[in-house]
Length: 475
Ligand code: PLP
Image (cartoon, rainbow, N blue to C red; front, side):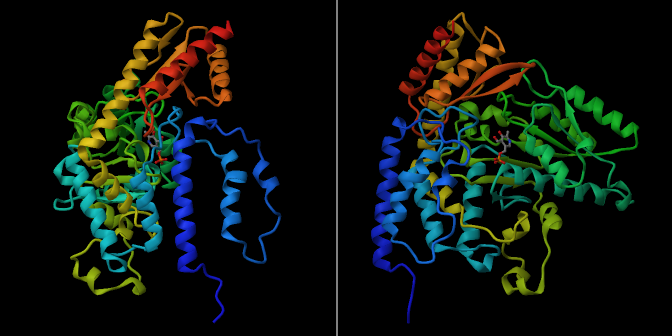
């Protein structure tokens, strides 16, 4: 029978070539310009207008990676990448992704690959202990964890479950839609507003609570706003607190916010997308003080825990609340294991039905590094950030723009916004490093996020020298 498939031998050969290519890429990555210099439309102009009628040799496809794709890559895995928040990766995670693709499993329900579900449950239970999270987030308690694609999806699921729970508490269920109010700080990630819009709560029903001088939510302002909304006949139902805001890594005070949520019977979601990883080290576990008040929590191993994008770990205190919100059982998915109630069907824990075997890469990462290895690298990043912050403080042309509790340093040149913007553009255009900016108190600040897997002291030191030299040449 005629076949167009790649043979096993061809796959073996090309697979080895591709793994070699990735290993070489990772060895030479620090010499590549970090920020892609590609112009809009450049890649598309170099691609054929139509798809090929006849299959092409795989060697030609591999050759096009260097020729076509690499120029359009911003090298997130470069040790000189200090922009946004990291999205780091590692060899074991890459191999876990490869195995997941090789198995090609679609793990929507337990029966469609029991290992896909059970490994995920088990590894997420491990992480509860590894991060010092409350036991109720474990599958042996009332709750449990699930891997989502992103923190944005976790926020949406948390919001939907919160809405479902709140509407059940009300006698007049239909009547409260449109009067429900959600709360987060003015510094929260935009994904919270997006979730509020998608869920139909309406952006006008999201209250952005004021922050203090460290850019953390003010609990008194939260309490006041809730009271004012209740006075208006509205129904407060959801609060999102952030452990490590995107802009400046501010830590919302969970104990005080949690007490308010408890008193007011509001769902508390804790978004620790990047910073949650720091809690691997007992020294930084203080960031989770008060998390025992949370109804849900998420962090992204795909940001700082060496696990290739995408991998967000989402925990709920009551899995019943989540499943009641998201479960619909059509006839064609009925099966004995599900009916028995003895298994988890993760399709009921997130928006999509289908799901990849993401737990493999997480399992590979945790087993390869061990808790000790993960702690070592994360603590090293924080130490490097402290060094960087001390250099900023020692240079009279610069100042810190916010406290730097972990691995993000926000700083600025005292010359004003235009100088900082010129400085950033010059550095990024050089291709030698990549950093991004934010606005704090209405003034531009540069963000130095240190969390790439291969970043060492020499990279941070060199980056600071380059920042100083560029500042000098701007004068
Ligand atoms: N929450 C915080 C605090 C973030 O910093 C980010 C992204 O940087 C997100 C949520 C959104 O992350 P994701 O891309 O996983 O949706």
